[in-house]
Length: 432
Image (cartoon, rainbow, N blue to C red; front, side, top):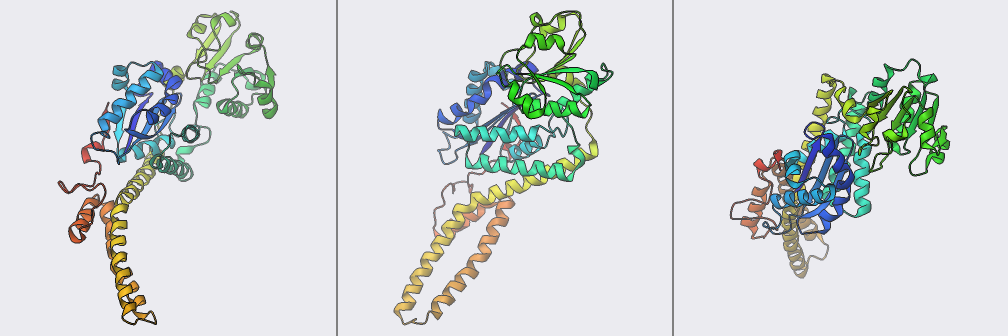
């Protein structure tokens, strides 16, 4: 079963999100390797959300693989990795189970849960979270299917609705807020601190506004290579670069602030836009004369309202994709019953074919007839199995196979007629 622990800009403070962004991504390995509850884990931590997707190994005993155990273990591991107290983490995150996990991730990857609805960056962040989990060896077959379907869903939303309007991002919103203080971007000296994907997005947004004088500084020393690739100036002296800039934009993955008040000379009017989480700019910068600080929290407060019609269309596509994913997953759960039935029938078939040959079926006509009849007889049960699975009644098929043929189906509990499917009340979002 799939489980998701989620916290975002709507239900968590930026202080908690900042702590989670530092330590939580490293927790996936511990979740999978320590204990028997979780078979796979993918952790996504961005500037305005934290997501931990885990898959419970349902082949384990019911006692060992309870949802409660999985959630508590995940909270404990992430708490230890991030420094957020377990009680505070439980109060912050929302827990999603079963089918609701897919619909949530599909909405997240499509930008429907972002500060700016339809933002550009989130689908790439979701993809990189999966790639990181693959590298770390923490994915599972269920999570692979989930994230691959999320990627195709986000592409469908972008291509078939107006929700993916060009240039939706926190970068562009930050520049829009700064534009009210800037007369001419072409004459503005801009310093970018950072050389990652977000920095490249920032360069594109600046050029769309006409900025021409852009310098880059990298705390990790990669400024020259980045600048050469994008046609920028590079600096190796942060203090001098800050003094020469009118606008400073930070977007590094550094776990500690790169810019503080002591690096800035007072008096000169400058706008500092901090897009980093953890924050790249120490809050004490706000106390420097002439400095105006726009951090993520400030930028998020100015996020535009959703475009209702486009959002409605996008959510309809997400819901449809989630329903299809759930139906396919239900069919997969019935696979052992279908395989067991076919194996049983084909075993009988082979016995009858051998008997027919012993009685003189030298030309194979009886064998061909038996094989054709077997295929015809198995067609309807196979179709009916998929129909029952999609309607949530897959357990009845498994029970029927057991009752009619005496075939034991792995995972089928004949005491209550269930097949280990998630109970209806476990499909809803819960507080940890």
